[in-house]
Image 1 (spheres, rainbow, N blue to C red):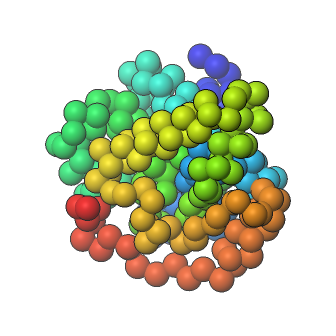
Image 2 (cartoon, helix red, strand yellow):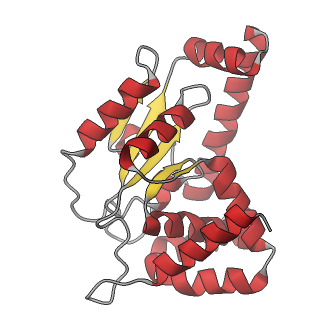
Length: 236
């Protein structure tokens, strides 16, 4: 197993086992946690890295989250231990989705949620994989970064050195797949602004300016009750 992933798993289990003085998990409390969602080519990864640098925390993108979840999935005893340590963080909403779509019946789905909750326990900037939905009931600042097709495709074309028309198709397909993933797993529209504390259009802002704007907005956020008080995600 990749040593970086092994260390991350160990840190997840250690942090997830810590409880506050009331015997409850203190996810998101006294820790810097920002959950990011980003359209393809909207600059989410760049913004996430800058935010993590400003806050002095780790940045976890979709590839890292997938890697940890899949590597952990291969080791049964680690999966069971994660389940035990993280279980107190999961509300009724998670247990209810296990009886839904086939995707949610797989151990990987359960493990992915465990990983995101565990990473949030130790603080960090978490990009994608439904982190904004999984962490909705905790004091975590949730940001969605969007952009026009033209601007996003232009970025993808430049970064990947591909023709603009191919980049446009790449953006359309990737965004469609992401939206279907969120719809299938959480029964939600990933582009509905009410699921986020802040939505930013990256067309005319640099990643540095967006990161600065996010940090400024985060200072004024007031975390109240659970946005899903009945313990489950509403059906779209």
